[in-house]
Length: 382
Image 1 (cartoon, rainbow, N blue to C red):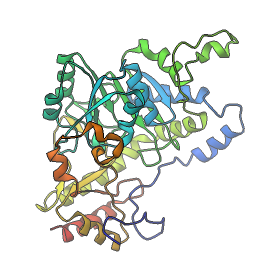
Image 2 (cartoon, rainbow, N blue to C red; image 1 turned 180 degrees about the vertical axis):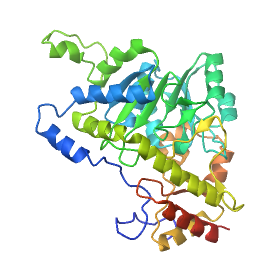
Image 3 (cartoon, rainbow, N blue to C red; image 1 turned 180 degrees about the horizontal axis):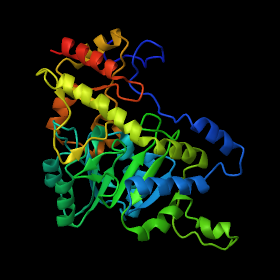
Image 4 (cartoon, one colour; image 1 turned 90 degrees about the horizontal axis):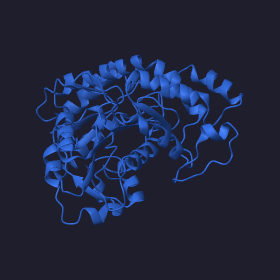
């Protein structure tokens, strides 16, 4: 077995898993009540979840709950008015979910390199890719660390293009004191099982232009105006292609429960993040993916390090029942994106490709665990 072929660890009493889903203890009873009621699919709990999310993270935006973060991204691209052949600049390093919806739509993907310090999209790389055909920039706040939003917004404004934030990692993150979710034209979030909290699966789309809210809700549900339909008006026309991208009331129930507990969730995650940072940043052989920019408040979804002997350290950690991985991979390695990267170079991604490693960070990781893991990393890093 090679260093790269480590299987997923089993959930045992001894050991630290890379991810563990957070589910509120209240959700067992509340979901059971929901299962005994009338609304299982999209119903009043979805509306409630949207309202509570808006109050906490996106006060001046419309909020649309979806079946996944990928659904939210696809809706954002449609609502941004992107059409077949339009150029969109996006990051080379992200979950494929960021970029696959662009393939649905026949968009021309232009991959930007990343920054070595943050693994976020490189502003300098973005600037070089701008053309008269560029219609949007999509940025990902890797691990929960906000991108350089002032510079990205300046580029977007100067060139009259849309800025879309994939904030799947960044729930609770802030930029210049403002919560991620209300800064750009569109922002998307994910509530997949391994995110800050989960709704089983699910997502949110926030939209600055509230005039797009009704259209977003129609496209989320086959292009049908649900309000009119539920009023018994059956002659509604469907004049735009829609999808089945709605959240269910079961998922929204879980979301509402965990949303009320979010402050304690993020507090714990930041404590673990800070422990890693304190324990590892003094070691010159270990580079923490963190830029120490005071304008940014980290969302603490992932803690990532860069080391020269990544495979060796990963194996040694597994020997001590500690699960680690790379989580996301460069998108140009996937066949579906090959035609967009022919002849292109990504030197920063090349440098980091075999160096970065994600350490466990979730509600079941203790400060003691984080110190122990750091001790092992410091011991084996070369």
